[in-house]
Length: 75
Image 1 (cartoon, rainbow, N blue to C red):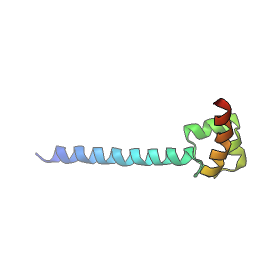
Image 2 (spheres, rainbow, N blue to C red; image 1 turned 30 degrees about the horizontal axis):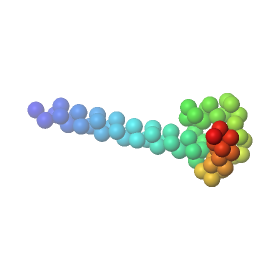
Image 3 (spheres, rainbow, N blue to C red; image 1 turned 30 degrees about the vertical axis):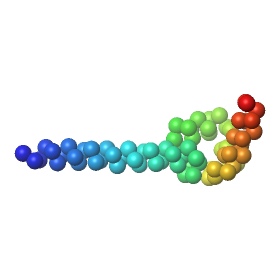
Image 4 (tube, rainbow, N blue to C red; image 1 turned 120 degrees about the horizontal axis):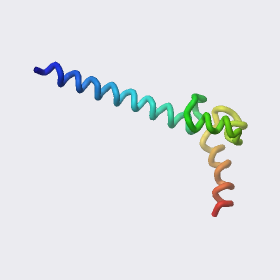
């Protein structure tokens, strides 16, 4: 009787692991730490924004320097 319960736990554990991997790769791609094809990364490459023009591994300080004038202009 305990066989279906173990199968359910295995499916939940497997989906959690894949979900964490997907979230990790998405967040890393958002910050440009690893150049992978995330949705935002593909959009940034298509639009040709300045974040991609600097280098593929743009760190957070560069992104903040790029965003800070735009945020001040919008205020």
